[in-house]
Image 1: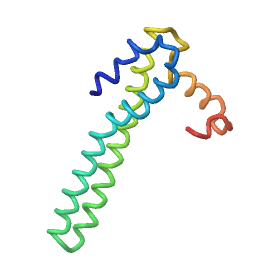
Image 2: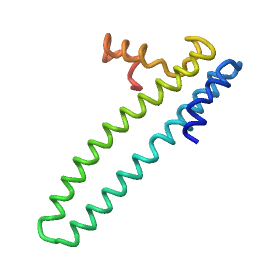
Image 3: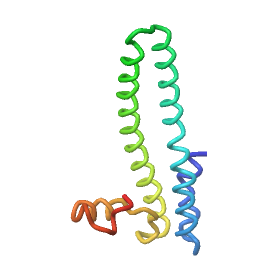
Length: 126
């Protein structure tokens, strides 16, 4: 399913409703499918570490909580990398089919604007 949503711009980017359809496919399709495995890993680590910490008693739950915090930070970093990679690939497929204007989320432009004016009102959403 992830592959189907990822390559869908090759067929749909030339349609008149691409801006609307592409945004829905990117945000509710691809981002959801990329986010799901990392959520599953985070939940699994939290449950395993909680179970182990409660079984050992004493101060061990606090140690495992800190370990869970470190694992969560690594998973968030991996999720950020995966989402940027997925968005760029999705937009590249759209640009391949229908040109540069077919990009749904032009990250190069967004990152350039954020670098030029980090506190600008147009970039508050990011």
